[in-house]
Length: 158
Image: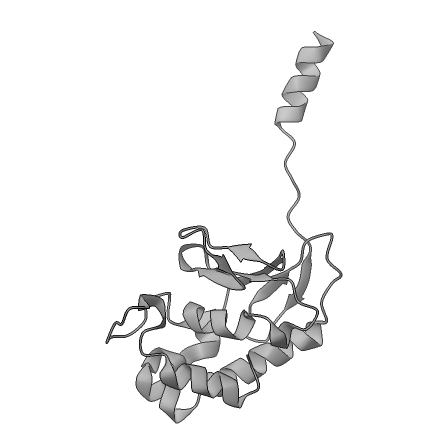
């Protein structure tokens, strides 16, 4: 009887959520695994600020008008830091990060410097709702990303 009671109690135990490290000005929440040192919240905010600045450039907004509302489109998104190498859940490919628009989640591989991570790039996918604008090329998820990539490089992102 005691074993049954313990089994029932154990089945009700839930895993606590990852600790919140930072909430950005645009309303994104950064979560870090318990095994990873908490990243610098100023670094997280700096990546957001520079990304928003890059995405606000005329060339990017002309390529995709959704970028004119970049900060608003990132509200209520979560950013999670995982292992340094991630595997995309749909393709199984190795990647530095990926965006799950249905869940409003960005997952990036752990890097000591968030500015050197895939975060800025993945924020672009989040702003687009994982739906790029035509014309679609061989790499559908990055179609028509010339202006976006150039703006991110101009802000010093990889």
